[in-house]
Image (cartoon, rainbow, N blue to C red; front, top):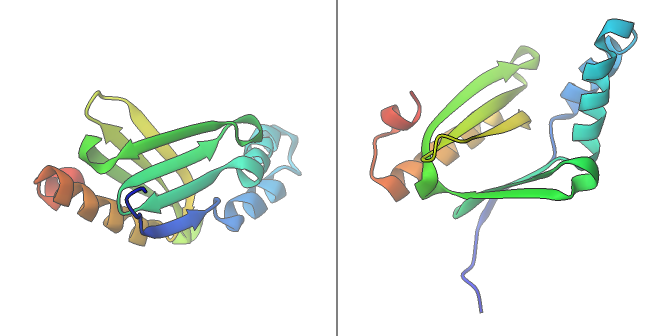
Length: 130
C-alpha cells in the first residue's frame, strides 16, 4: 500500500507550441523546430504532484525522469507564445538541469513547484525562484 499522491497537473505541452511551429514549418529553415514540436506533442507528458515531478518523453515516450522537491535548488521560467505557455528549467542539487518545454499554465505550475520545494527544503521562495 503506497503513499497517496495528489496530482496538480498531468498532460502534454501546450497546443499553441505545436500550432506556431507548424506554421513556421512552411519556411524550410524552421523545419527542425516543427519536427521537434511534433515529437513533443506526440510523446512528451508532464505529471506534477505534491511529491514529485515526472517527465516522460524521448522517442515514443520511452524515457522517464522523476525528481523530488528536496533535490531542487532553483527554478527559472521563460514565457513563450505571448505568455500563453512557457518553459521552465529546474536545477538540482547535483547541478544537473531538467528542462520543461511548452508548459501550459506555467505560472501556476512554477509557483506550485516553488512552494513545494520551499516546504521540503526549508529555503525561501526568493532563493528558489532566483
